[in-house]
Image 1 (tube, helix red, strand yellow):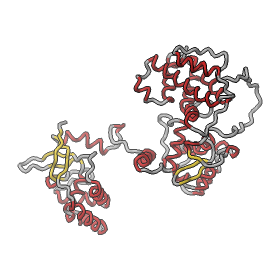
Image 2: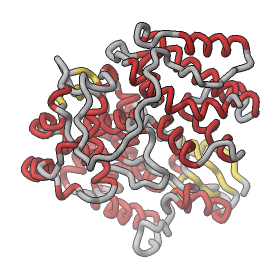
Image 3: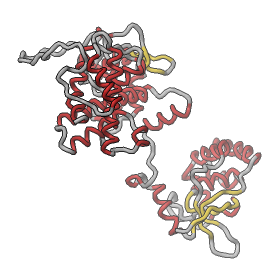
Image 4: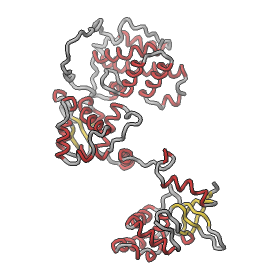
Length: 452
């Protein structure tokens, strides 16, 4: 597959008379120019405008093969539209018969701008033969090909790129999806993608935002409820779209959207009792409200009560004994600290101990090198440790799943990486002693195996 990079004069480039965009092969360059212009229509003018504004795309060089004969010319096997646009800018008369009157006028203006700084030479990839170029041409125009070809961004990825590089906020749907991804982790592998445009359409309706506990300020979503509460409605919308319980046609206008929200249960909406004093950005929300949502009534059944009412984070019967002196010292402080008096210190120290324990296990068992470990978030390190323990038959399946939920930030349990992060970085989160003790109790079986 021999090829080189070569600068070719525009005048020596020939359009492919057998271009697959044309229904039938053409017999001459003139006919090819006319038919390809008819086939492209206004899109050719838009391409010409982009070339005048920004130049030729340096990420997609035209592919050419040399023709036979004494006068060496080059047949374009990839990049015929760009080549035609250049030739039309250079000499508009060659395409006028195939354009509408508005497009002719626009091309004339573009041609004037083009000639003030013309492109006379084109950097191309010169292949030894069309056969050598065929693979690359095909994967460029025949879709993803299981990942070999061009994998186009979906609406969420396009929106994310524009936000990161365009100096603006994500769309409303993008902000909501990012919020849920931060709380719940990425969707399961193979899950259907959710169109960010549909979520945006729903959230643009003020009455919908009001029901969900959201407000809008300068293009940025703010929430009037804690994380767990405001996530309820957003999570329901995203899951319904992912499972195709609703489609864009079901929530296209305001009436449809409000009718859809009427089907939400109380559990799908924020608890009014937890409403905050003012609206806050997602990243500044407290994790929980001032009081828990009342549980649904259930048939009475015997439930075990806590064995003791302890004041420390770690119960006295815990047998963890880390060997490294620093980690042992941290654990000793956790074991003796009065969590009812020092909940903030206990919350931060709990996060530190979990992270030090996981990192020690990873290093001891060679699960990651130091560089990878430093560049891997705590949630992923927690999962890697859990999977290794499970593979070694050191922990049961139920405990492995529990650690996965903790890593993914599921809020059905007290311990979660998202909560640990908030303890350290969110000034609006106030850890409660009982929640911290519950978090430890959920983690203790795992940590005991880490240090076994």
